[in-house]
Length: 289
Image 1 (cartoon, rainbow, N blue to C red):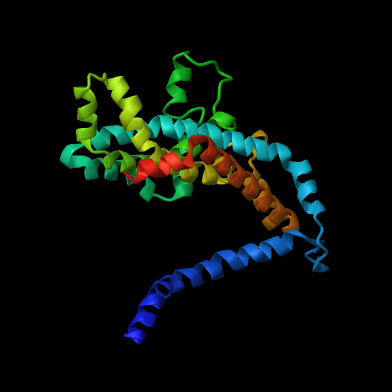
Image 2 (tube, helix red, strand yellow; image 1 turned 60 degrees about the vertical axis):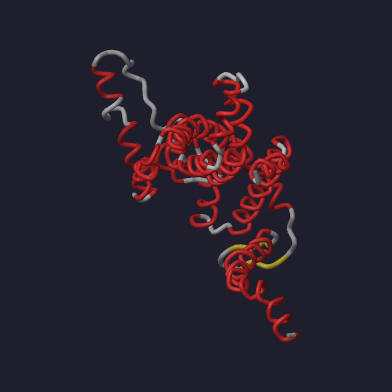
């Protein structure tokens, strides 16, 4: 019996051992190496040495601070647009989809079976000056000759919103799907209008999905570089483009590592502030109902 008890106590640790080793090898170790690299000085020819040069962080932020602000601003706009587009779609599928819910979700996610880069390039073809949207409008005189969308912030935000929309739809749909329709009917029985039932019942119960969707969307959107590279211009460069250039083109590994950790720290602080303002305890209580 004692052997069985010891074996039963160690079972949970054995179950998480593979994932723990995976996280150790492909997350913790690379993070530690990047932290060490961000504090080094040198170059690719002479080599890099550890000097605990904390000025890498201040120099990087002073040089590319505007790119960081632009990335966060684009990420915030794209996240808000994703909420505005995802919530009605998820709401309709959850409460009006009936037995075809899986089909509607599949149709919604079908374009995302295509490569991320190909979808971004196709978005570029749609937004080009002579494309299927702007071309006819210009030919009919609705748009002036100098009007264009590509190489602007609008194009970058549009691409970000399109590419990361499923990261918002799915968590919100899961939260809405868990709501018992009898609770909503009870609100109607208590003489609540549709707007009141939504504001006081549906929306609070769906906050866990919105909370998860914002985190899953804002973090990758703010660090994205493909959309800014394909759809934007020199004035729309995001911090992800800078990190890519410093690492692969300039071989400035300490600068790229410092920028990566600075961005990570800013995003973590933003997430904690967001969770605090939204009320993490309330969200978790709603999720447990």
